[in-house]
Length: 246
Length: 200
Image 1: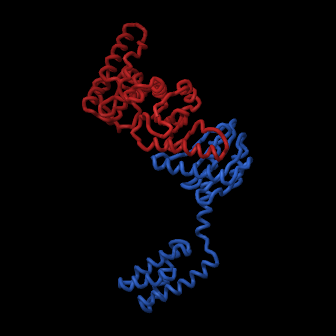
Image 2: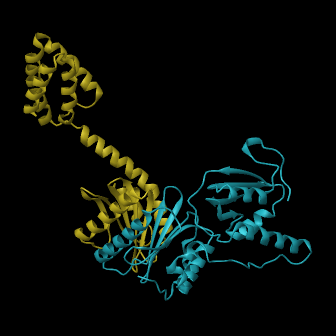
């Protein structure tokens, strides 16, 4: 894997991306690594040395890491950490090995390895008892995490208690519950049914989408450009007959 | 303000709109269907509180949409305690309504600011009579603390006070602070303040 050999403008050169990722892991860094190549830009998110997410070319998670590792002559720079949803649960060594295997297969003229093997879900959000013992909830979580526009998710029971959430913001669950309670009060005043959906557009360009379901409340912090209709359609199949611990 | 609400109400699917203030209630409303005053109050209060609650969670809400079976409610904050509420039916193009309402919200904010400014700056005839009587009393209290120079100091302070803002009863405390600062003896200054505060 080639790399640019200059350090101008705060950029790091002379080290391969894979090596630099391992260094960040060893140093237990919490940061964002920005990777640039041919006017393209991708980001890798570290939390205390663990690679938790990545994005590039509209792809997120492990697939984005595999993509970034194929970029030629990348330059990279470290910036401040972000409170980021954990989409990656595999150890970095495993991902690098998988990426190398995929590149070898591609180099041998074989078709690009499509296998997403070893997508271990024994770590991160899947490791919580509520999710581990509930296949429906696992499916829901997998679906949510696969949506690139999702910045964070909050799954709450009807009492507003957190089942699982990706953000470190502890006040958000209360706010989401409050928005549902407000919706119920307004429903009574307007003599209607619902609310089926609450959408809050924020000044920072993000959107908070809340689905006050019968079994649980789902809150999604999204990119402001996200299509509410598409996200609703993606979630609908997994929202049917959700069983959630109270 | 009503003209601005009319611009929203002509969008297909819009059932009505209202500017709601947490303290004053509905400031202006244009509703096709007759919602009860109490119902409107419930909706408005919850939308305002949601914005305030959002601020506590670090969220700056630009627009809120509540989708019910028959209606969608769109709330756009105009200031901390005032919100533009638009009620659309289920078939309305909420994106269009929201964009139009956001655009008009800017003009509404200007109107509200102008209204508040002119309201608080206006001096009624009653106020003027009260203030003139008060100036005399304050000058007498100042003379007790400073002696004959009081009239001169009072004149200077009154000029500075009037230059700093409107001469209204709500700003008299600023004038008293200025005068108190002119009295060199702390005991006399305290006596002056106590005497003047009895007048207010």
